[in-house]
Each structure stands twice: as C-alpha cells, then as structure tokens.
Image (cartoon, rainbow, N blue to C red; front, side, top):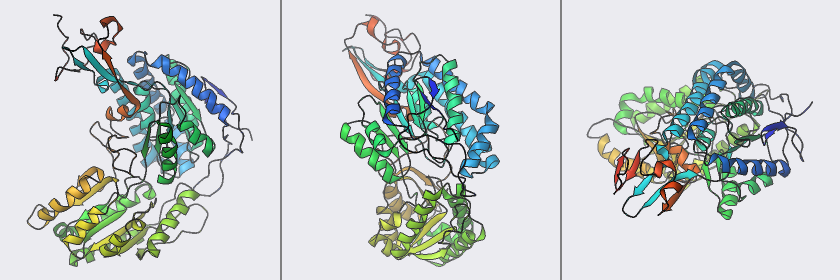
Length: 529
C-alpha cells in the first residue's frame, strides 16, 4: 500500500519519512482505514520552512484582494466537493454525516472562509493609526514567516488545519500556512488541502502560501515551533500537548496561540432550579452529549445549592444520562483519556449517578457519565475535579449554601465559557451579583440562561479565555477579524516619506480604509498643510 504524498513548495511529492507510516482508525469498528500516510522527516519540514519563508516575503506586499479571492475560491471548492468531504470525514470520525457535517460544520467552514476574505478586502483589521502632527503612523502587518497550524480531532472541517478558522485567519492576515493534519482524519485533510491548494493557485498566490504535512515526530514539532523562520504557531488540542509546544516556543521567543481544555461550568441558582429542574436537566444532557461530548465548550461541571429543587434536578439529570446509548468517540486516545479522568474523580471522592464504564469493542464508546460531589470536597481537591474529560461526562457540585457556591466559582480554572441560570427576582439576583464577577474573570465568554455549547461565528464572538483555556486571554480563535490579529505584528512608520508608506497610511487614503487619525476613526483623507 503506497503512501499519500505531502504538499511542499507548490507540489505534491512523496514524503522523506524516517518513521513508520500511520493509518486513520474507524471509530465504529476499531479497524484501520486505508491508505497509508507518512510521518515526515525534518528534511520535509526544512523544505517547507524555506518555501514558506519565501512566500511570506511575497505575500507581505501582495494585494489583499488576491488573497481574499483565494479564500473565496476555496470556499466554493469545498461546496463542490461536499459529498466526498462529508463521506470521508464521517468515516474517519464517526460524526453524523448529514445532521452534523453537511448541515452544520461544512456551512460553518465555508462561512468562515468567506468572512476571512471579506476582512482581508476591508483591511480595517490592520487598525491603521496616524498622528499627523508628529508624522508617526502604525498598523498591523503580516508576521514575516509562515504560520504552523495544528488542528484538533473533533472538528474535521471547521477547525481543520487546512480549512478551519486558524488557517483562514492566518492567510487573510497575509501569512503563508504550514498545516499539519490530525492523525484522526488525514484523508479528510488531504481532500481539503487539494481544494485549498488549487484555489490559491487560481488566485495567483505564490508557491509556499499553503503547504501540508500529515505528521511529524514530536521532537521535530518542538523544533519547528521554535524555528526563527516561523511566524507563529496555532494549536488546538489537549493541555498536555499544548504546554509542551508552548514551552519550546516560549524558550525561543516565538508566538504560539493555544486553545486547550476548559471546564465550561454551569451555575444554577436556587429560584430557577426550583421552577425548571426537569427542563434544565434535559438542557444539560443535550449540551453535554452534543458530538458525543467532544466539544471544547461542553459543560463539564454544574454547581448549585442543594435543596428540594436540586434533588429533582439531580434525579432528572441522572435519568437523562441513562436514557440514551452513548455515541462513538473519535479514537482510542480519547477513550483512554476519558476513562482516566473519570477514575481520577472517583478516586477523589465523586459518586457515580450514571455510567462510569467503557463499553466493549468494537469501536470506541464510553457510557454517558454523570458524577456528583459536595462543594466542600470540590474545594478540597479542585484540580482532580477539573480533569480534562472529553466525552459525555459531567460532574454535579452541590453546595451547602451561597457562600460555598461562591467559593466554588472562585476555584474554577480559566475556561472558554461559563453559564449562569437565574430568575430576575429577589432570591437569585443578589447571588448572581456574587457569582458573575468570579466567573467573568475566569471565562472568555459569559452566558446567561443558556448552555455553553453552540458557538456563533460572528465578529463579536470570543473563543478563548484565561489559562489553561488558552495561552493568552487577549485573543480569540473564532470571530473575524479579531482572530486575525494573532498572526500580525504591530509596526510603526516614523517620519517615513509618503512614497514609502503603504496605501492605508498615506495622507490620501487611496483605498478608502477606516483609520484612527488624531484620536478619531474616519475614512477621510488628511488635508495637506
């Protein structure tokens, strides 16, 4: 069985592999899928870096409209190959082909690409700023090197390194992209890469603007994120892998943007819990089981004050978790990680209300699992109960009173999202005022009266948060053009002659960009004096 070729320096060619090949695994059967995919040597990485560096120099002065055209062409190309993409991604991930991949994730992916194209054309993401009196001008510009993108296993299209949000944001900001496929869906990534490569070629972008490797050795990954020629790294995945990459990048002073684990806690206040106990139990299970619990915004912890309303909620939640067959997990590593996380929580004192065991093969499945612990026990061992548990699993935290509930909020780690359910009344509002400030500083996105799953791809969205949800609380992986600013450098032009300035910093503003001039946003030209 021959290996798939890699995409380096504008052509598909056999990899220079020094390690054995790998295959994707069918999550339903547990069997390997053809074909073979290479684990590239450093020689492949070296050539890709050289080509990406050369492309970066060209793209820095490339017309934004041409880059935008490439993104738009890629979006249209994905729609043209929709049947093949959906079929392949479903086979490699066991995610539902029609309801999830075709109806939801593919449209989201296409929409992100079009949004990135629009942002590239508009140019306001650069935030051109001018002090006319001192003749100092600044704006955001491409990094000057390729962006290395490592996508996760749970979104084979919308977060794929060859088509997802990080890819789109990096390219729209004028940077070449070096994508590494996730081993859970390499054939899907190949199809996406073929489509994107042809789209960018059609738009006239230089060779090296987009390159793709299927896999590299861990030591080469650490070497790559620290390489001086690299512009930045974007990683979505586990905390353990992200921290290793971050340590290597930080040691070399190279930017790295991480989206990692998050508990996404849900706090249910007393009045709303008494009024809607059974309804909220259904909402919790629906959110927690979405995508077989393999969403980074899954509610992993639910906190409340123990009373009659909470007893009804707990009984209804346990029944909901027991009521449905679990879905398939993405692979053996996900199954093993979930098993270990549940075991850690049980060892620390958690009680099982539903599930708790892996199911027999074939395939990778774990019972829908609901655990319970007191707030006092949670506060004694907060790290153990905030373990990364990828799958349909959540833990209930029952507080004795409002003080314990507030203390539980104080003990939450940095997370992508946090939700509070409450009633507008004299009982819940004072407690909301105590809980919300604690969760606000610990979450990138604060929600009222809704579960944290469901991420609108709009400019105002924040998909990030304090560590360990991400590597930096000032950025987002979703929401354009804000996501583009991760892959940009802020550069100033001090007393530079007009003929040497980029168009959006020239007095005349020939492209009509929105600019921040002498303290005001305007599209007006600067009048000569």
